[in-house]
Amino acid sequence: MQQIVAQNAIRHLSTKELRKLLHRYRVTDGKGFQLKDHDPTDTAGHLIDKHHAAALLAGGVEHLSTLQEKLYAQDRWAVLCVFQAMDAAGKDGTIKHVLSGVNPQGVHVTSFKAPSVEEMRHDFLWRAIRALPERGKIGIFNRSHYEEALVVRVHPDLLEKQHLPHELVTRKIWDKRLTAIVGFEHYLAQQGTVILKFFLNLSKEEQKRRFLERLDEPNKNWKFSPADLTERSYWDEYQRAYEAAIAATAAPHAPWFVVPADNKWVTRLVVVAAIIDALDRLDLKPQALTATELANLDEARQALETEDC
Ligand code: ATP
Ligand code: MG
Image 1 (cartoon, protein in one colour):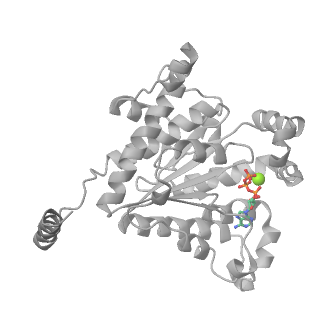
Image 2 (image 1 turned 45 degrees about the vertical axis):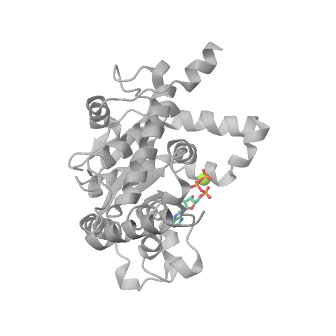
């Protein structure tokens, strides 16, 4: 019984607590950024008590749902949340839990896999642009345009399939892609898209533990792909590529959150807190109706009131 009560309990972080928590993980200036300064096992020190995590997540999910309704009603801003991580860092689970209370009509999740032939016949931002959220909506990128400076950087032979003109494929291509992303995100921010980027920072040890669990537990076997092990063997190359990408693209209007991913309860709380904080800052109010629209409502009321039934 006690357990049921605890599960149903809902608690909210105050704005002050929320901001203190996010300050720990938010990167808005890439100067001097190093992944080694970010601990995947971090549990937010004294800021969160693990025993309250479930209640705080429930409170966050509820709060997010209210804010999303206002975002939709106001219909001015769009929100884009980018999720990047090594395999088994918990992207899917985080997205599922954090958005569990949100009206599905207000959210659109896009998973970016290896690009199709059609996608590769276009510039690298093409498929990301097609998936951008419209005003009033939250767009979730499960992997994103960043893969073009991550997996492709780690495996440069993938560039060959992209059929780029040879003279454009130089050693500077990664810096140029990151600069293009900076411009793209700046443009989106100026058009009313709030951008939040999450790097779920998993340790190599924890990834091993989660892979073994996927192999050992029959109901988790489907989550394992032999390719995951190949990518794991490039761990250091990926860490360097992530570090370069975050350093080049962190900005106040497009912050990165380097979220500890070894403990799922921390990951989920930080992500929900970041989205709540960003929406809270927008001062969301439903659009005021014009005089004509108000007159139409009056007319509709009168029509209903004078109906026979
Ligand atoms: P999960 O494993 O949890 O299902 P996932 O995001 O790892 O999620 P997968 O289908 O396993 O999904 O992998 C997608 C793969 O597509 C990743 O290895 C990723 O690096 C790759 N990918 C994504 N974008 C690109 C890209 N632009 N070029 C090449 N490969 C890409
Ligand atoms: Mg995978």
